[in-house]
Image 1 (cartoon, rainbow, N blue to C red):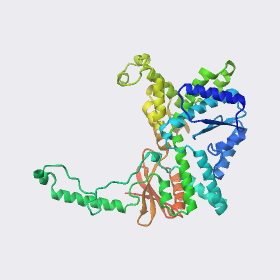
Image 2: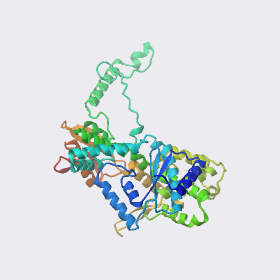
Image 3: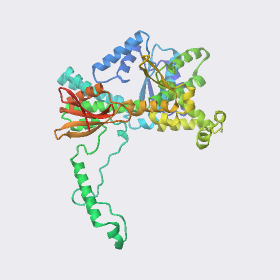
Image 4: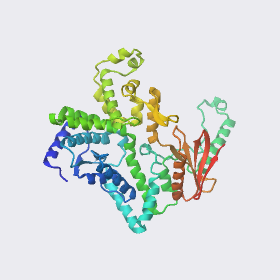
Length: 492
């Protein structure tokens, strides 16, 4: 749908402002829709067409009720695609349409240039439509209940992927072979007359034996190495019918498409808010629009106790980085200065702020962003703290304001989306074809009830007993499900 003349004129104007700030984005198509259409598209994850499933209907009902009761309203929705596609709500005020356009162009710049989006499918609009066609064909063939139940099983496992997998280039292992199947022992360089001393034959023989044994055990292990992409392993090795394997592949593909959005939520929203603020306040606003804009913008960056607002944290960190690099508040000299007043007045007039924030936008994700640029001064200024449940008062209360604790809490919540690290350890456990998973404890606990639900869903796909090794109360334990009941066993 073509935009009305007034909105089209504004779009061209705001696009020019964005390009004037050196934002670089794909062509962006804006669609003007009613509120119920926007809720429907949002319930599909931002795409106009998705495969049929009752979860999308539930999401739509929640969004529709929220809008009807005045609890929530979607202002902007943009899809990482080439061309990018964004939606404008017809009922929005003109100042809101300006703000949304400015915000969207900054998002599109982030999608195109951020490293963590570089491996995503830029034709995902078409791909989603193809996925929907395939699933509907299976619905016609096997019935809606069978297909939707299997999709529900797959969706419950969609987080069992490796977010870094798209950047890993796997090559066949080049192993030097000694004719017996194992790698040859490593010989040290030496002169011929010293060889018997530098490389004693008995040592080489023992090393060859060790290598052979290690190689034999690796060949017997299945999989040979721990596999973090559990969904890929299931697609390749679980006893699935062809249609089931294709649906699981669809869920996996879409999980990888959405993964960078979870990895960069703070940065992406902060970047868009940073630039819509600049474009609106420096270029777009008329005198009569200032109050409406301020009201909307203040709601976007508002904070509430116990909740992290990615818009607020992101935009303030980008502003802080720009200010620090403009004034030279970085490097060895600044870090080693222990006089608070001197650091407050520090200004080398370097003017490197704009260049630095574009560099950060290109290379970082949220975890790296917080780790590299969160400072004690920033935490104090923005009153960041850690909260916890107090059993005595039966309320959540501030438990710590120390910078180290605040930063560790943030990083913990951002690492692997705050979810536990799960690997396929053995697909032939006890030599009975049972699936053995390993929870690598990186500070994130595995909730027993959630683990049991996951094991139940995995059993539906693997068709054999499934196990997961984890830590509970400082003890190694094995949680298992055999298709009928769950069990819990301590490991030595």
